Structures are given as structure tokens and as C-alpha cells.
Image 1 (cartoon, rainbow, N blue to C red):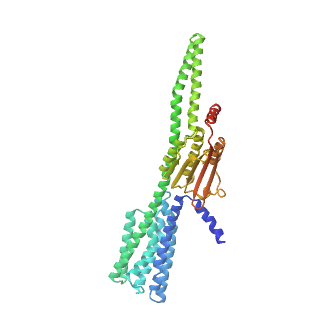
Image 2 (cartoon, rainbow, N blue to C red):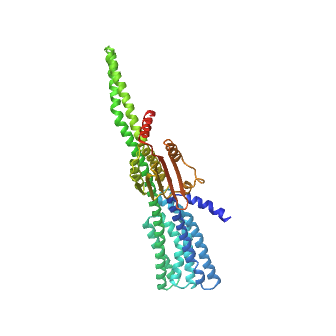
Image 3 (cartoon, rainbow, N blue to C red):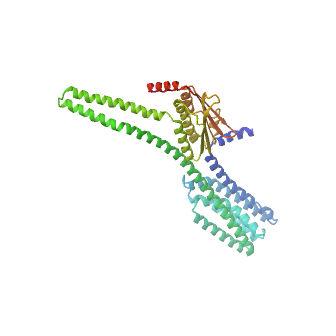
Length: 431
């Protein structure tokens, strides 16, 4: 029964990205901090309180009120973090009831001091620190730092004065005030630093997404620039020649002159068609060295340590084009489907020299992505297999659930130069 309850939750946790896991663990760490401090420091009043029905009732009332106050504060903690991150506001009025409960806990503790039921400034200070910590964590995240500091100083001053008026010796009052001040600073700092940490993690994740989109946009701009350079002049010439032919017809010029201009238009159009095919073919056919350099640049810009190795063996053009597509799709998958910290690419050939090999491996793969039975496969790898099958190649993918790694292995037969030339000519004819 326990395994049935744990396994689905564990799978959902594994399917989260590293950023989501860090944010969730930080949020729960803050909640655990508030409860541990309250339970540990407020509960120590019970064994340190003098025996008596009234004093024990007051001590239990302090603990019960503190627990209710902690419950309300931790319920507001997620909203306080969202307010700090700018996703949704949290009005200060929501802190009204927790503040009243904090005042009640403080008043009950002062009453115990007035009844001489608790001795020692450190004991009193720790109890008040435990009661104040949940409120300080949540309230300190929501308000500006100066406001949080003023509230902390005011609380410590008012409480210290109340303890002195209740008859606690000044040395014990100073000890209690020091413990409360230190605990309050720790609580406020813990809350604000954790919220700042989550904000930085979110900004880094957003920056990685922006870098990936910029890389795609840059490639689109390059293609559009090449297409504009190729077609701009030719289209202008076609427009000019067509207009000239139309003017010759209107003026009644000999038909041979108009035919000559339209023949030139036809020649320019055919040349443009060939140039466009060359541009598109260059865009479609991925050059291996270019794709390796591009993958290194994009992945390193996204914070992934990408390293490529090659045995420097010359490969035919169609083989390089096929392997270049593997590198391009593999780098895209690393950016989209993994929180990788490293990626390696190795290019070489088998022992017999009959097949070109490319092995691409990375870490940070989500559970659903590396477990074919748990996650759905995308169309990218299927398209790669079809492309490699066209040149007699194969593509294998494998994930290591223990290490969180994913490996792509591509094999492409190395044909003879004659076969390569024939394959290249066939492609040109097909296009």
C-alpha cells in the first residue's frame, strides 16, 4: 500500500525539470524551517515551567496558539513567494489574524514570566523566537526589507519592555532580546534569500529559453537574407524586362524585339529557379562540421558543456549531411527535453571502415523522456530514422534511468565515390 502511494509521486517528481525540483524543495524547506523552529523552541516551555495547573495551562495555550499561527503563516507562504516573484499580489490584510495570534503567544509568555513560572532569559527568548519565526519568514518575504527590519525592531523592543515590566531581571531581559533579535534576523534572511534564489533560478531558465529561440531566429534570418540576396536582383530584372516588352508591344515595335525581351525573362526565371534550389539545398543539407560548431555554440550558450571529438577521417558528402541532421536534431532535443549540464559528440568509423558512426550523449534527461514505456516518443527521432534509412543508415536511442543520460547512435554506410556522385546527382535531379 505504501509503495503504491509513493511510486506515482516519485514518478511525478522525476518528470519535473531541475528548475521545478529546486523551486519545490526550496518552498518545502521554508515550511519545514517554520515548523521545526516552532515545535522545538516553543515546546521546551513545557518541561521548564514550574508545576501548577494555571502555569501548565498557560504553557499549553502558548504552544497551541503558536501552532495555529504557524499553520496560518505557512498557508500564506506560497502566496508570499509568488508575491515576491511578481506572479500574484498578497495584501497585507491577510497577515492580520497571524499578527494577532503572535501577539497572543507573546502575551501568554509574558504572563508566565509574571507568574514566575519560567526562569532564564534564554528559555524565554527561545520560546518567543520559535513563535515569531513562522510569521517573520512569511511577512519578511512580502514586505520590503526596511519594513521587515522596523517590524522586527519594534517587536523586540515592545516584548523586552513587557518582560521587564513582568519582573524579569534586566540581564535575562537582555538575553531574551538578543535571542529574539538573532532569531528574527535569521528567519527574515532565510525567507528573503530563498525567494531571491528561486527568482534567480527562474531567470536563468528563462534565459536558456530565450537563447534557444534566438538561435532559431538567427538561422531564419540567415536563410531569409540569403534568399533575398539571390532573388532580389533577379526579380527586379524580370520586372524591368517584362515592362520593357509590354512597352514595345504598345508602341507597335517589331515582334522580334518583344520576343527577345521575354526570352531573357524566361532565362532569368530559370536561373533564379536554379539559385533558389541551391539555397534551399544548402539549408536542408546539414554540413557536419558546421552543425558540430553550431551545436557547441548553442549548447554552451545555454550553459551545457558540449564537447565534440572526431577521428578526422574524411567522409563522403551524403554521409556528412545525414550525420549533420543527427547533430542538429540531437542538440534540439537537449535544449527542449533535458536539463543537461554536459553533452558529448563523437564522430568516427567502425573497425572495418565500412560505416560512419556518430554517438551523441547527454545528461539531465527527464524520466518520461528516457523511459519509452512511460513517455511518448516525438516525431524528431522518427524523422531522423526515415532520413537515415534513405542512405542505408540506422539510428538507435537508449536511456540510462539510473544516471539520467540519453544516447543517440547513428550508423551510415560509407559508399564509394562513384556511389556518392550518383547519389548527389540523383538528389539534384529529384529537386
